[in-house]
Length: 190
Image (cartoon, rainbow, N blue to C red; front, top):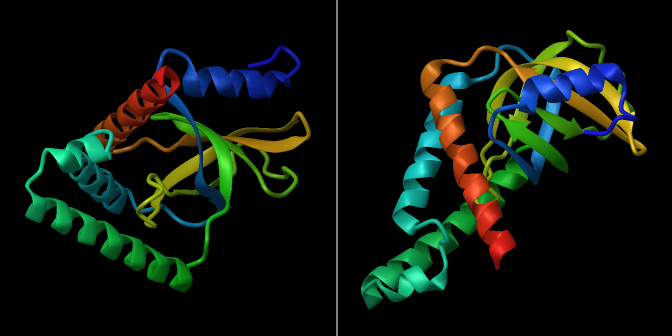
């Protein structure tokens, strides 16, 4: 956070990210104003399924883990990777593509680099669509409200506060963010 940011942007940054786990990423995401209530049940199911797959594959998902598996399991794992990649391409062809953007994300909301000039006044309700994993082309749809908007270093930016989430979804989101944070830390150490 910079002292040169507008007061409303600094307040939104503090409300969304102070004293909570937050991750910076570049992910496919968008904010759609007046897009309905979102899909919190589907978002929870997606995050829980994603966690299960990551648990089975190991945190790194790298070749070190595969080396421990029997040859048959390694072949099945590789084939599953190929099938998921092909399925992902098919899904991307049939659905609108989300633009990849820098964002900061916490269980309370996110700061999102906007594509268009910022014209969303605080209080504008909508839905955040966010692809939580680069290998799975499915998106979370979470209800959110604009907390602030500003142009920061020439980039239109939105601060979006999530609507109150069901406890199970909040838990799944916290777990996903913790995994992202661990991967960030591991990448810095390398």
